[in-house]
Length: 249
Image 1 (spheres, rainbow, N blue to C red):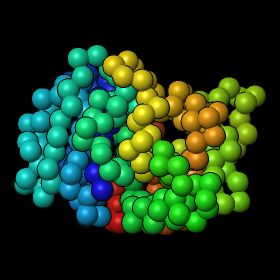
Image 2 (spheres, rainbow, N blue to C red):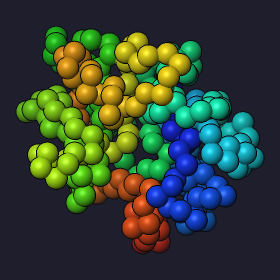
Image 3 (cartoon, one colour):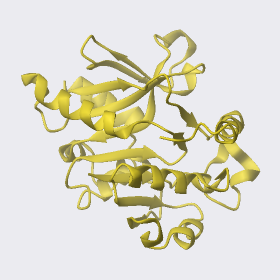
């Protein structure tokens, strides 16, 4: 299985912390968040990794090179203009030619990826209605700030029945949200238009639901965490979590 780490964003919510470096290069403990993510993938056997780049791309390429020293192979995808989360994946369709993992570059997690993969494969095979190769499985977690997230409603077997990206206060229907970690089948990219900015949360996922393409959700376990470092409180929480020694997976 391959992976795409979405690392092109400018991190504007973190202000001075990301003026001179990409958000995923902020340190967690003694190493950048992006290295935590690469090592997390590697330790689950995912060694073919793509990273999309835009803001201060050289900080990432200088640190990681081709990935050999970390036991992985890294493909860089440079964007002259931001393509959005789904647009970035579309540009890499030639690389993402088998089931692949998407992880947002500002996510710090100890998620059990092996369990996620098993869940995805189970959803693809247990029900005849789940055999569409465009299916995807999202890792879900509970949030205290539902207006800042993509909210997800699922049925008894975990199939997504509703998805709303960053709803207004009066649209909030759950505190279960998309974590920024997702396992996808390559055919998913057929639904992404070529060469334009396109987003998973605000465009692709809602459109797939309208088309009745099966999507599934897998809640994280009680001993797992997902932390969005894209805000100062989130970044501080990630630092505290790492300092408390809770980063093992």
